[in-house]
Image (cartoon, rainbow, N blue to C red):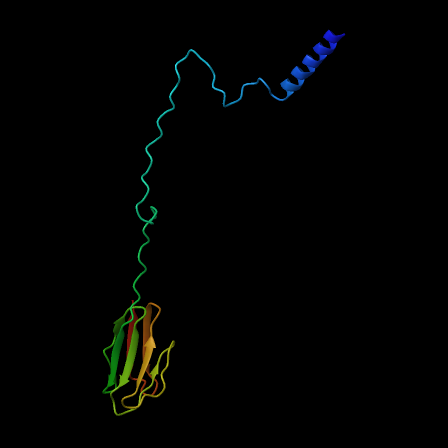
Length: 148
């Protein structure tokens, strides 16, 4: 009877231990073999880390320069001088009345008050195009601003 109980106890222990994975190989247990060990391939050459904080980013093109010039136009002898005026987007044109008579700049996109002798009017051109203008008081006076 003792032999049966002992046999059942040993079988039970063996059964319990086999369910827990006792005696099984694990991934970390090296296999024994007569074959020479295979060396892993050398890793590909790594790109050296940059020495500054810039990470290989494409260089952005610089933003186009916005002009900020001022160009004067004189109103003299019932004429605009110079005309046409060539400016870049962002430039300002200033008309100065150097005539004894009053004048008024008139265009579809801008208008001045009446300019007496010595008065001035300015307009900043932000969009490329051709701007025709004249004098609202003297219709024979015409000028042009070309914005590039």
